[in-house]
Amino acid sequence: MAHQIYFEDIAIGTQMPTLIKGPLVKLQHVIYAGASGDFNPLHTDDDFARAVGMKDGVITHGMLIMGFVGQAITGWIPKKNLKRFGVRFAGMTKPGNTITITGKVIDKRNQGGENLITCEVIAVDEAGDVKVTGSFDAALPTKA
Amino acid sequence: MADKSKVGKEYAPVTWEVERGKIRELAKAIGDPNPIYMDKDAAISQGYKDCPAPATFLTVPMMWSSSMPVLITDLAINFMMVLHGEEQYEYYQEIYPGDVITATPKVAAIEEKTNKAGKKMDMVTIEGLYTNQRGEKVAKATSLLVERK
Image (cartoon, rainbow over all chains, first blue to last red; front, top):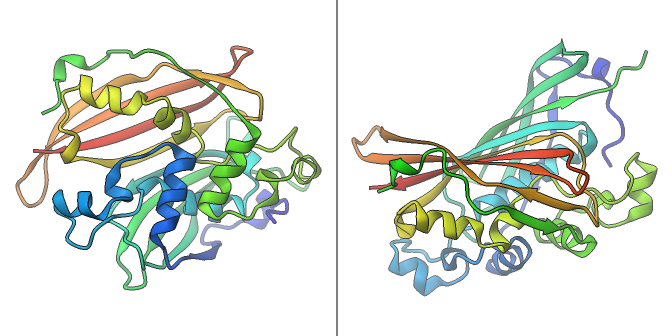
């Protein structure tokens, strides 16, 4: 996984390999709550979630979806080459959703002695509703 | 609503000893099968010193230290009305098992915005620059919290 990718291998428009995650189950929220330390009951307690206006019950941790996007990125570009990774949480995810993560390189440049790429990423559900949008920068080695 | 007088305020440092098991646990919770997070030999063969922390690991010290809930309370943000709007990490070097990382969370900005539906929201930006036990910068985390009003 994540075999070395070189700066020369990447063009503007190069697609990140697609990653499909899910369907999400409530148990994964419990596991993620324990791992991350985010015990907001909005993610694990249906009664609490309904009481604060979520008619279908619990919603998924946004950071778990960011984690999925991180999995997609570092399954393609080695973790050690990742310089920046940012997301905006655009929509709520619920148990039963299947999340598809895609990405596309939008810039490629030499800057400060590094060979940088910028890639846009997006996570959507089975209906095409957007959950997360974002981007990352990576500094890649050259073949020369 | 968020207390705008707190812009620039720094909170108690968050110090976190990074455990090998926590790195593996977070990767498993995400369902990320990449062996670099589970298997030291695999990580070394791919050019790491040990299993690196996954890309979103810095959520762990913030949440497990209860730093984020303390901060939300101090800022007088209504916990029931707060959403996580954005999250960004800048990575300066890898975080490995045994590292002791420290950040001082700081309120970088509080801005009021109006959404398309005409509803007002406070946008609160929290920054944390993490250093390791050698005093080296390892990463910067920036979180945007949105308080609906």
